[in-house]
Structure formats: structure tokens, C-alpha cells
Image 1 (cartoon, helix red, strand yellow):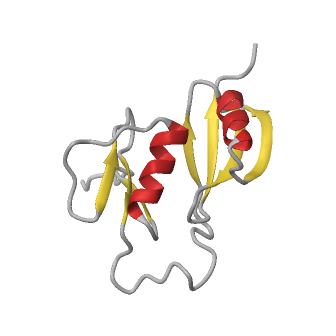
Image 2 (cartoon, rainbow, N blue to C red):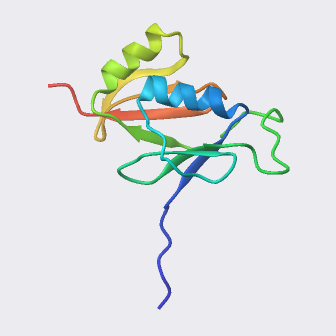
Length: 124
């Protein structure tokens, strides 16, 4: 019997590692893990580890839209509050908040153009 594969790490390739780290720390409240390979910043996570990294050899982030076909979702405690804070800061909101079976959801664009979905608790 073979093992079943399951996701165990997620990393976005970014143009400017520190700019992206500042974005994810400042707006989403992520905290860096103390150790990571060179060119990678890993953030603490209760689920799948999440990281940003310098592009791998042969990756041209300017060749077309980044992340086409990839869906990345992050869970937060208050999606509406995060939406409001990002909007106030001038971050591009791709989809305004709406309720789903996964909770309150919206989508925004990070500094490299990745579209990220946020899921939070449903409003009471």
C-alpha cells in the first residue's frame, strides 16, 4: 500500500522578499519562523506552513499573471475587519466580503499580484 500524498508546504515566489514579508507581517499579522533556508521566509502557521521565497531558477514573474490557476486561501478570525483594514490601506480588493459555507470570504491582491482569499467566521 502506498502513502497518500497531502499538501504540507505552500510558498509564493516573490520579486522583493523583504517588501512581501513586510506586507504579510504588517497587514495579515503573520510572524516569521526563526529558521529558514536562504532566500525563503517561513511564517508560523497552525496548519500548512506558508512561506515567501525568491523565484526559483528559470521563473520569470514578469512573463504573465502570477498564480493563474492557483487558489490560495488563508483563515483569519475576523475577515470583515481585515478587509476593512486592507481597503483603508489602499490594497487592491478583488472581491468584496460575502458569506459562504467556509465563513465570511473576500479576495485581495498582494504586492506581487497574487490573488488570495480570506475566510473568517460568519458574522453573528
